[in-house]
Length: 317
Image (cartoon, rainbow, N blue to C red):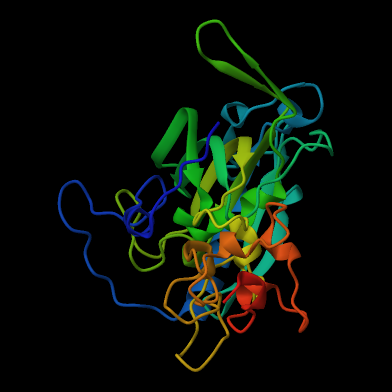
């Protein structure tokens, strides 16, 4: 599938499943900003309580199903006095925790890998790739706010941070079969469920069906992934996360600083800048070796020439 190249204009306006948007019935009320550290503590408590009080049909994913899917996942609340039925397990028995820093706040995001039998040869997406998925999003009260039963493609850079943090932990389908009716069957693909604190979702903004400061859940199928080069400069976008290597594209903190992912300080992060070093030579033209990879052209100072505005000799300038 050919990747769609989107402009910075459309990147900023992208809505999709997880972008900020207005409610169909009117503007979302403005809610005062809370302290991120305090909100993360509250969200974690809510998510852990959910994991400890809900069980799922684990036997459906324990190897007996050769091609599991997120649609098979059933999560049920454990009522007082009940015991977990045979073939089921509490969510708290199987979750994985990923620790990360976002917006200067330490976060924990929880997820469960529901198909650990995907081949090691299958690829995982980077945080900047396009992914083909099916999914269902719901709140802790199980109120569904969005879903896609047929495969849809998204650019992870346009989605809430939680998706960029979790999807790279999963693998795409080992293979696929094109059917005569135009549909495609994906074989043995990544299947998961993620439990996202509000700080890695919509935080104070909220969106249609999701109040501000609401932790949310997504169950999903990861079918395929496609490497992105947003600015068509021959450098894959994920490689243009230079400084913090945190899976986010950030601007420099000031015009004098070079602490973000904007080499020439022109207020465009390098993954959306066709001339990364601002020397007047497009990055793709600084592929002096003509091997289709500008990152291989290293100057005498050890810096790739496409990131060094002083490296002009090889460009005939």
